[in-house]
Structures are given as structure tokens and as C-alpha cells.
Image (tube, rainbow, N blue to C red):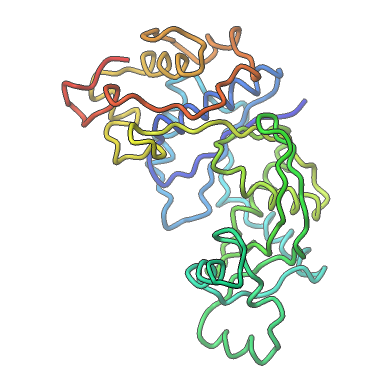
Length: 314
């Protein structure tokens, strides 16, 4: 039986968009009769904070979302990632890259280049030992995999077949930290995750993870990339839009049942203005095929500054 999961990064509080995705991930898993796990993506130790992790777990629990097993933290699993990096290195699939992010972006925008933004053009792939030694004297390298421009097809439950050419992407950052693209593949396999439900914005990088899973011989999960929540300006929801976290909303008089009712209404599971005590109350009415296809725009009259009387009960 496949396991579902939600894996937030504890670099800040969860906002309404994150919570909606968590609700969907839980509903997808439970609809299939699957276990559901929460995993903490705290690879970036500089940005991760224990207080954010605590608030995220508390806010998920307030909606009825709890992990069926131990909450795993990626910061505690480095030996697993290092073992796979050693394996890739032994197979000759790694090489050091001395390019900055800006240099990669500029190369992609160059007149001779046709790559999408962020696609690595292979600048450091075939450097000579002397060139590598000279560059290493100036900058610590990240490590990239040799994907050789592999063509990958991702079968997504929501989007159908998504095809892309995989570039040589980073699997170890310049500070020595294993990269997310590697960690997520290793962890999903180790935890038996069979379906990944997450935001549409991550679909474009999924071919990298599928290629890496295939290269490492691990199972490729099913994917369901769901629509994001947008602010009234049509941009991806963020703190700049006002009171968009559960703490903010509660300070403005919006309790978890009202928030969950609003999320349920956005999914067509409840009428506007409903209160829902727990995400489990939505399961009987949920169908993955009925999830809206378009992003949900959070109405301007539903958000505002903390304490602002214009913030409505939802």
C-alpha cells in the first residue's frame, strides 16, 4: 500500500497555500487507504528554525493532520544521502561545478542558448584537471550529475504526461550539504512513499527526480501536482498579502474550523461559510478527479493585517 506525505521546510510559518496542499496530500492518501507521513525538509540549517517546525506541526494538527509514523528530519539522514552520492561518484556520474547561480542564469539567457531559466549549460562538465585546480583556488564547487540530456516522461495524475530534457543538476551544494533533489528521492524510497502530492510549481523539476530515481534503481512514485493558491494580485500567495498564516488569522478571529471550511469550499467540498472541525470530515466527499484544475485566488476581503476589522470570518 503506497504511503503519502507532506514535507514542509521549517524556514517560516505555513500559510494558507501550504495548508491547502497539506489537506490535499492527506485526502489523496486517505482516499487510497494509505498511510500519511510528515517529513521535515530542514536541509538548509541556516534557514531552518525549531520554532517554525513546532508551529508547522501544531498548525497541521489543528486541522486534523498528523503523521502516522515518526516525523523524520532530513538533517538527521545525511549518512543515507552520502551513501548515494558515493555510489554516483563511483559510477563516474559526478563532477565539480564552480559556476554561481547568476552565471548559470546568464548562460541560459545568452544569444546562443535556448535553455530554460535555471537549466545548466554544461560549463564545467569537461574542464581539464588544470582548469579545475585553478577554479578550486577561487571557489568551492558544487557537485552535479551527468544526466547527458536524458529525455524523461513524468506521468502525473493531474497533468498527464509531462516531458522534459534533464540537465546536469546539483546533488551536493557548495557548502557540502546534499541537495534537495537527491534527498527527496532517497527519502521517498526509504519511507515507501508511493504518491507525491504537491504544488504545481514543482512539476518542472520533477523530471530530475524521476531520472535520479531511475539511475539509483529506486521506485518512482506517482505524482499529483495540484493548483496553487494565489493572492488577489494573481501572484503566488506570500506574507506580503497580509494575514495568511494560521497564527495571523486566529489573531484576527478566524479559528481552524473556519479556515478549514474555507479550504473545503475552495475544493468544492463545502459551501462558502461552512465550518469543518477536522480534515477527516471531508474524506467521504473527496474525489481526486474532482479537484479544481485552476489556481485558487484568495479573495481580497478574506485577508488583511492582523487585527484589521476588515478581516472577515471565513
